[in-house]
Length: 158
Image (cartoon, rainbow, N blue to C red; front, side, top):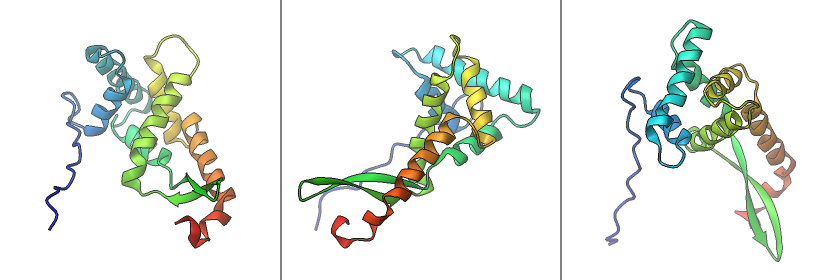
């Protein structure tokens, strides 16, 4: 009988203003150098801009954007007899949420401009409309998985 316990998943807490875990995760991804009070302002300003622009619930746009950015498949490197193959693997929605949030925060940082305040709101609205750099990055990953689909059929790689 194993004496090891199951790994408890790290449950994200809800943020104080919107009482939503997704917003808290976005706050944590905006965090730089431990300045959490500044990090709270970036997603909150983004939510305010989204609400002002779309005239509806500010939480619906980030949910929709993260759902659209979530990848269905990814590639993993497998070594076989000295050569490395990129083997495509399916990715569920729960496992794909972390790369989706990472990609959306990466894409908002890469947007041109000096001020960080409007960048996440623009990126989230673009992703909700199936546009933006995060969606492009997701499609790039899907193309790579499709190109290496021949590697997935062999039993040697699993």
